[in-house]
Image (cartoon, rainbow, N blue to C red; front, side, top):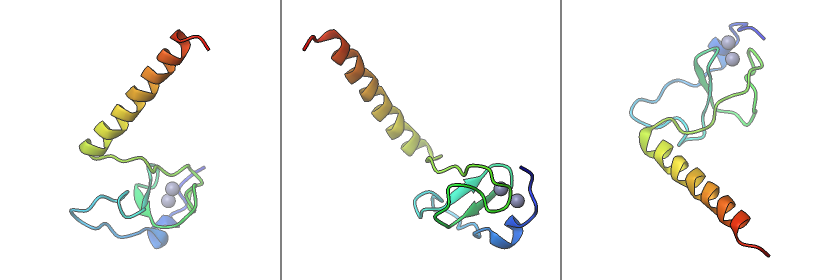
Length: 81
Ligand SMILES: [Zn+2]
Ligand SMILES: [Zn+2]
Protein backbone atom coordinates (compact mmCIF):
# COMPACT_ATOMS: atom_id res chain seq x y z
CA UNK A 1 0.00 0.00 0.00
CA UNK A 2 2.12 2.87 -1.28
CA UNK A 3 1.39 5.96 -3.32
CA UNK A 4 2.12 5.15 -6.95
CA UNK A 5 1.56 8.74 -8.00
CA UNK A 6 -1.51 7.71 -9.99
CA UNK A 7 -3.44 10.12 -7.82
CA UNK A 8 -1.77 13.02 -9.57
CA UNK A 9 -3.71 12.13 -12.67
CA UNK A 10 -6.88 10.99 -10.91
CA UNK A 11 -7.44 13.56 -8.24
CA UNK A 12 -10.27 16.03 -8.25
CA UNK A 13 -9.15 19.65 -8.18
CA UNK A 14 -9.84 21.50 -4.95
CA UNK A 15 -12.91 23.71 -5.01
CA UNK A 16 -12.20 26.56 -2.65
CA UNK A 17 -14.77 27.56 -0.05
CA UNK A 18 -16.94 24.50 -0.53
CA UNK A 19 -17.02 21.35 1.54
CA UNK A 20 -15.49 18.44 -0.31
CA UNK A 21 -17.81 15.97 1.31
CA UNK A 22 -20.81 18.09 0.42
CA UNK A 23 -20.24 17.41 -3.23
CA UNK A 24 -19.53 13.72 -2.69
CA UNK A 25 -15.78 13.80 -2.85
CA UNK A 26 -13.58 11.45 -0.91
CA UNK A 27 -10.21 12.07 0.62
CA UNK A 28 -7.12 9.89 0.65
CA UNK A 29 -4.93 10.72 3.61
CA UNK A 30 -1.89 9.01 2.15
CA UNK A 31 -1.97 10.70 -1.25
CA UNK A 32 -3.53 13.87 0.18
CA UNK A 33 -5.89 14.23 -2.75
CA UNK A 34 -9.63 14.29 -3.21
CA UNK A 35 -11.45 11.85 -5.45
CA UNK A 36 -14.83 12.10 -7.02
CA UNK A 37 -15.73 8.48 -7.76
CA UNK A 38 -17.88 5.77 -6.22
CA UNK A 39 -15.03 3.60 -4.98
CA UNK A 40 -14.37 3.08 -1.29
CA UNK A 41 -10.63 2.68 -1.77
CA UNK A 42 -8.03 4.91 -3.34
CA UNK A 43 -7.31 3.96 -6.94
CA UNK A 44 -3.70 4.88 -6.38
CA UNK A 45 -2.56 3.39 -3.07
CA UNK A 46 -5.55 1.19 -2.14
CA UNK A 47 -6.15 2.91 1.18
CA UNK A 48 -9.73 3.36 2.43
CA UNK A 49 -11.00 6.79 1.49
CA UNK A 50 -12.29 9.16 4.11
CA UNK A 51 -15.88 10.20 3.67
CA UNK A 52 -16.86 11.66 7.02
CA UNK A 53 -17.36 15.41 7.31
CA UNK A 54 -14.44 17.50 8.51
CA UNK A 55 -15.99 20.90 9.04
CA UNK A 56 -16.89 21.86 12.59
CA UNK A 57 -20.66 22.09 12.13
CA UNK A 58 -20.97 18.66 10.56
CA UNK A 59 -18.68 17.17 13.17
CA UNK A 60 -20.90 18.57 15.91
CA UNK A 61 -23.98 17.18 14.17
CA UNK A 62 -22.35 13.77 13.94
CA UNK A 63 -21.38 13.94 17.62
CA UNK A 64 -24.96 14.73 18.63
CA UNK A 65 -26.26 11.74 16.66
CA UNK A 66 -23.71 9.44 18.27
CA UNK A 67 -24.57 10.81 21.69
CA UNK A 68 -28.28 10.20 21.12
CA UNK A 69 -27.64 6.65 19.93
CA UNK A 70 -25.54 6.01 23.00
CA UNK A 71 -28.31 7.30 25.27
CA UNK A 72 -30.87 5.15 23.46
CA UNK A 73 -28.68 2.12 24.04
CA UNK A 74 -28.40 2.86 27.75
CA UNK A 75 -32.15 3.38 28.01
CA UNK A 76 -32.81 0.15 26.15
CA UNK A 77 -30.72 -1.73 28.69
CA UNK A 78 -32.47 -0.16 31.66
CA UNK A 79 -36.06 -0.74 30.49
CA UNK A 80 -37.02 -4.42 30.67
CA UNK A 81 -39.15 -5.88 27.90
ZN1 LIG B 1 -1.25 8.44 -4.64
ZN1 LIG C 1 -4.18 7.15 -2.11
